[in-house]
Length: 352
Image 1 (tube, rainbow, N blue to C red):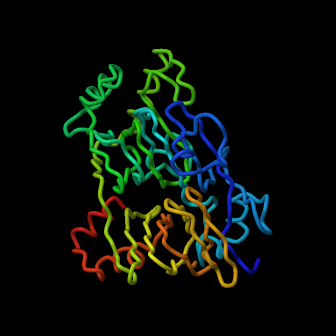
Image 2 (image 1 turned 30 degrees about the horizontal axis):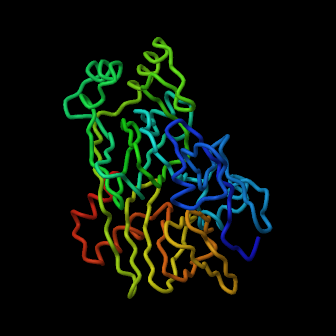
């Protein structure tokens, strides 16, 4: 196919019990269904929650079909993936998420029968004063202590509780126990996977009780996938001044994905060398590709194929850009050239 333009996709929705209406009411996503909206999957190739193109010549084709048919044009020259390589979501933790974990790659292959696990990162869009998250296990906690605490629901005895502030980001490796909420709105980027084990006495989907025997079995499955080592921290990101009034903040980066936040005062071009999911967290903006112009509303996302090479943005704009990076070329080199110390850059990318 020639003449590539931004790809607009359907947004599968999860109505889990912890959700509310913040994605609609505070981000302006008036195209979402009534009732609870816990998660809006902005670009997804997960079975059962897959995005489909909704405009242009590829209308009706699944994201997976597009990736497999035009890998060079969508993912980037020479890149080959059976599925779109990362997933982006907006999560409304109106209530607290269940304490849970996602397997890492090796564990997922061994115990879940899936090719990948799910490392993820959260970028906090909004958080109530005093908001916290659980992320990672306290030093010295062993499997017996963890089992007992999870059965008792005494999560603070074994898990690290961290303050949550808008604008900060945390990289959460597979195998890390975690939860966040209430009253927290998050943009999440992660590997394309839906593997999960959780420890709660209620079902995430509807809040119905989990029988005690089943909860104990769930906790044993979780313990088999738990990694006691990661202790992630929220970080503010590292900025690169691209031009006068144009800033790119590298929020997080690793081998599976990177997430940048672009703030553009007037007009700028965002380079696109690999598939990029652009999410608008500011006022509506105009995107331009050659002679083509279109609006991207607040709270909306669009997939930019690698074949575009770049997209011009008419500011003022506040955009998140998720992509799979060349860590050296796309992350380390620009940050070091911007004057950030090697230690700060290593800490940002260290989770990878």
